[in-house]
Length: 214
Image (cartoon, rainbow, N blue to C red):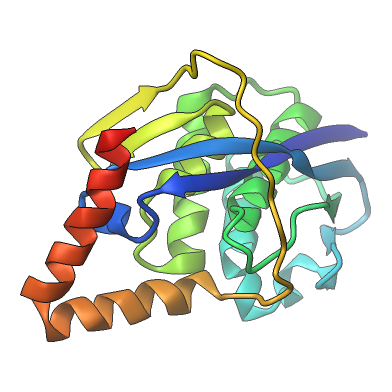
């Protein structure tokens, strides 16, 4: 058996604005973890809190994860069947990067199972591909934070810096219990932006200013 781990993330500022080229600051949330166990099996199976069954029967909302598994098995699987079991301590629909954490843990687990090297550049490409399928116009900030496991300053397609806080920082995370679907939220902001680019553009830039001031 091989095990892969992925952690959650928190965007401190710049959420949604980062999709439009503004900076965001994001940090890993290491108290919330996804664990993937990969074992030998007679057929390729996937199990989690949301679906258990054959890989080809995975529902549409898991298409990003399904595509990730299929692509990795094609590349390094040597035709071998595996059982993939995902246990997540990351609440979904809370903006904590659950899909990126799951993708990261599965990729790490599969590469470890097949005894193949997986550097962070390759892992980032794998997770970004899954995120684009899952969320549409994904900014990439979830993937880079989860993969790097470090605080990051991120500007889409332009700038990435690993951040270092000069003092210990404590964050209190409260769960409202109200989920929000990322793809829908991104689409809603995009719709508002298209209707009134000037006004919404100012708001988005102001969100970016918060990151620049930190």
